[in-house]
Length: 318
Ligand code: TMO
Image (cartoon, rainbow, N blue to C red; front, side, top):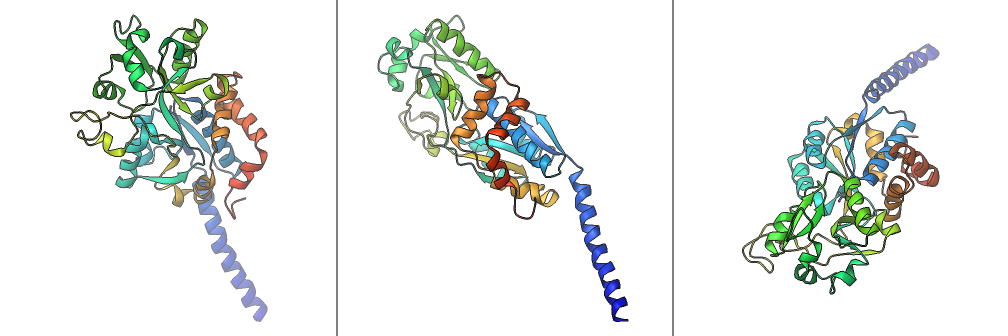
């Protein structure tokens, strides 16, 4: 009798366990959609994170969308994971989406970031006084191109930063040329460098550029959040954006708010993933200098960092 009861109990318990296991397996058949954007490190590291999820038994898909379109997708569950949210360009939308509740903050990377106007070192001899922004303002004409003549051209990317507003607020004789993606920026940089011509363009750190080319960020009036909301703040009392981008900015991960419930182990693992500046710069170097595809680069990056991907996988999820 005792034996029978025990057996029955066992059967019941294992059925319950079996039911849970079955249910969670069903969930893991739904792919985790990872957002890929239009600069290299983000694409490579998305594949790195995707490979780790796959090694845990998840299905993964990649969704190529712009940073401006990603917010809605992440909030409504069409996309699930974003591995690089940068303070300098994305803080406002990030905060708004988290407040609205569809998206969640999955924690900071170790990396400290900066996104700003940048020039290769030789430009200093063509515009003395750099990296001070007032020196740049005084020699705007040096950066003139057919696109902007007689004004200087500033090349920026398609990320959410109102550079034109800054140019206006600081009274700079520049016209902003918005390029399609990171690759387009590196193309104009490469052309200018080949001829040692003056150029000022959007760049950021961590990135491969710092590993390859000496250069500096322009020093604008120091960033403060009120600079973007209060016209009275800063040197121009009529306009907002009379300041630079943050230095030592944060870099975060974001996820759809349903992720923790749908894929608990993947969510806890994502929270543990924290890239350093060097790991991010290395990821972009493999593609932008060594010529690999992002997929190849992710494989090589994981081979170069065998220890860390193991430490990311959350307790009880191996
Ligand atoms: C978002 N980005 C790193 C391109 O500035």
